[in-house]
Amino acid sequence: MSDAIERPAADPDAWATACAEDLAAEKARRRTVHGPPPGSASEELRRFVDAVADKVSSFQSPLLGMAAQGAVQQFINQAKSAVEPVIDRNPDLFDHLAAAGNELLAAYRSAVEGDERRWTQGPSEAPDISLKKPDEKANDPSDPRDEGPTPGTHIDLD
Image (cartoon, rainbow, N blue to C red):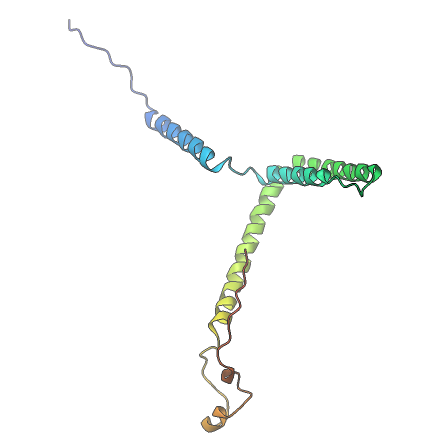
């Protein structure tokens, strides 16, 4: 009988395990470099409401009396109590609304891009189909082409 060394059975999911470990390490590296990834739209809305509430309640003005500050705090609490149940009941709604908003913005950008390009390029090179004679066109003060190039106006959509 031979003294064969028994090898452990090969892990059938070794590749998947290695990929999962690499992915976890990459996510950890990105979190340390870029911070935590943004949450869902509902979590972001909740954080936004909390940030606004904290900012409003931090305005301590001597001009406002204690009653006014109490009224502001009561308003903040009422607003939060109205928003929280909506967020809790419909967390996916806000993800869909955020996606729809991004799609609307993309559609608007594509619609305006062509016009913006046309506005910034100056007068078009469309053929002149007027009934004026060539010598009349040169002296016509109403011809917009005689005004010279006009500066384009950049529309920033971001």
